Amino acid sequence: MHKLGKEILAAVLLTAAIGGCTARTTPEPEKDVIQERVDQMTLQQKVEQMLVIAIRGWNGEARFTMVNDPVKKYLAGHTIGGFIAFAENLESNDQTADFVEDMQEAAVQNSGIPLLMAADQEGGTVYRLSQGVGGTGNMPLCAAGDPSYAEQMALLTGKELSAAGFNTDFAPVLDINSNPSNPIIGVRSFSDDAQTAAQYGVSFIKGLHNAGILTSLKHFPGHGDTATDSHTGLPLINASLEELEQRELIPFAAGIQAGAEMIMTAHIQYPNIETGTYTSILDGQEISLPATLSHTILTGILREKMGFQGVICTDAMNMDAIAQHFDPKDSARLAILAGVDLLLMPVLVESEEGLSNLDAFVESIVSMVNDKTIPESRINESVYRILTMKQKAGILDIKYDAARRTQLHESAASIGSKEHQEEARAIGDKAVTVLMNDNDILPIKGDAYQNVLMIGMRADHPASMNYAMKQLKAEGVVSPAVQAESMSLQYGDNTQNCLNAIPGRDLVIITSNLYSPSQLNLSASESMRGTVQCIEQAKAYGIPVVMISSGQPYDAVLFQNSDAIVCIYDPVGMRNVDAEGNPAGTYGVMLPCAFDIIFGRCAATGRLPLSLPDIVNGAYTDTVRYSRGSGLTTTVN
Image 1 (cartoon, rainbow, N blue to C red):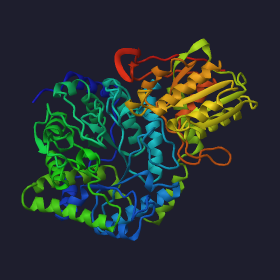
Image 2: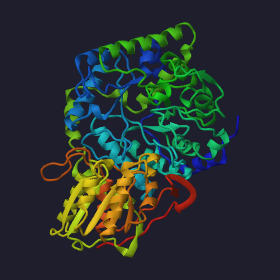
Image 3: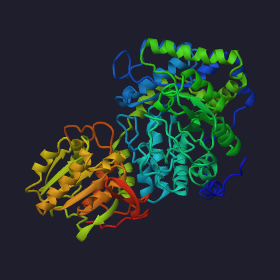
Image 4: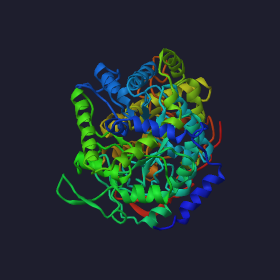
């Protein structure tokens, strides 16, 4: 065994220096109480407790928003460990509260063990609450320049989850976005720097804990250096353990010291660390066992080397990285033997047939235990950890009754409140980063331009920009005389209409959204080509352009012909606004914040959390155009 790398030890010291955090003040449960409960469970119940399921649709319906009788009956007759909710499950605050309570009331009928009610409420590009504050996401929090903002945003996120009845957040993401070509992490990470990610991650954990929410660090041992999305393929990283210790493992070490209850695995091959292989059922090729299925990585490194004693949860087992290459029975066996405690979404459940398939999956694991393929002690260890976590969090003590449901409906009314929106706005304003400001065009005086065209790359951007202008007018920042029209570029499908709308304007504000490196090739990407064409059209008419890079900030180097470039690291807009122009649904934070900076409601103080390389012919170069920490300060009008 290698000794812990000095960088990981530095992360541990960093955690101690900033105070660390512990998950709960509840006293440690009596071990024999938990063990007694495990001993009373049948083998089938114990295996079921190791499953976290999802039901996103039902019998061909795209959404599953009401817990129907078959699901209630199933939960009441089994001992499922957890449920992960998606946007397809959540429509309104009251509906969400009822959905969560219906799930829990059914689950406790038989075993008395409540579910881990979980969501991927990372903030920014990954959020689930349909009426809540979407949150800034991780990268804006780092751009804001103070870890206390990460704690504050996580506390707000945790409060909204708790108000709806959730007890678990699969967050924070502690991957380092060390590879600009990474197609899945990007702005979900705090930074491309390990120590920075560790510091902000610890603060985020503390915020969730202070809201009474369980945390899950992801994606161990690091998804930031991949060029493949594990949802659609099986990534491979050739790093050695020593290299991981110097970078990727640092935030996870800090998160463990901070008291994170769970860690989510990555479906990534590390052939220089895990030498075990498997014959892919997709093409018959020999592949390395990914981290999710690696005893070397999960037990050898995470448990024995890094000292993690909490719950290990897989990433979704139905992702292509696993589902395309491994027989489901084999992947379950390998994951459990590797040290996994919770199997996330191991079976597609969207009908009564899906529930039957779930039973068959459980029985396959039970059979492997009975024939000694999987030691029952390995199952018992996992269930003990899961129940201990639930006990320490107070989940096992909750009484699900009419009084709780009433209380939950009352608390759910706070989700997405104006107060929460303003709290998020104050943090988001700190994150907005100005990279270019030719001739000090920013901040724009409230009446300097009377005819403004706002072009959003995404379909949900125009509503956000309209809301931002309405808000600034109401606050007296922008003159009521300013006429502002919005339209969507629709990722290049509406380019010509946008070009036609530019002549005669005084100012053009346009957004981009980089989500894939392929967009950087203008000859192949309609979306980015359309954005650049709109900038060139405006400049040809002598119209000033303010460019908002709303997604991964790497595309900012393409817009040097603009008068100003602003980065916000979060493309999520508001899908709907009501008759008064206010958000009717999830509140997307960062785009309105960009307008706060552009029109001088507040000064720009955000700084780049990562470095931006130059781009030539659609490819990154080794030359850095904007280094980490770059950013201009503007004034207030």
